[in-house]
Image 1 (cartoon, rainbow, N blue to C red):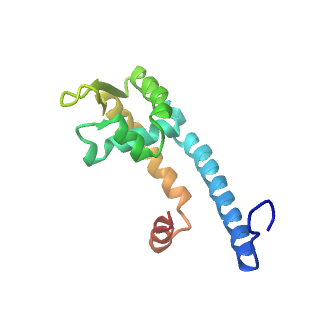
Image 2: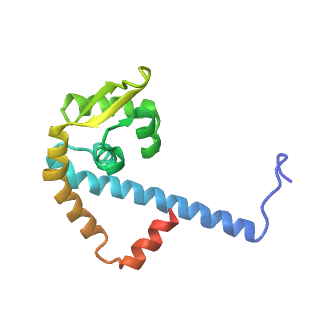
Length: 150
């Protein structure tokens, strides 16, 4: 025991080392995807975070909009982190944020016509090309297997 904690032994040490390597590699991948993804949509004036918001709002399930809480939960970010992003997107005309008529305490985020045009006409072709480039060496089976890991 060291400082009141039991020290890992044998296979636990190897498992911790592998976990450290795996999580560091995931961190590197996330950074690389952010950087290369940003390049894919920067000509449209979008960031990867804005791409994620428009993508979430473009889903059939979100046709009537999404509450800020639901959007934050879906994107796995805090409401506080989303606030500034949504303000900028609203300023740029991509989304509207309105009070929910059913619950005056809640606000609903909707993609505007301008946001739909940017998403469908400008961003989507570039995003598809980006996905094709990134996944060029992956079979459907590889892609499915890697998706189920996360």
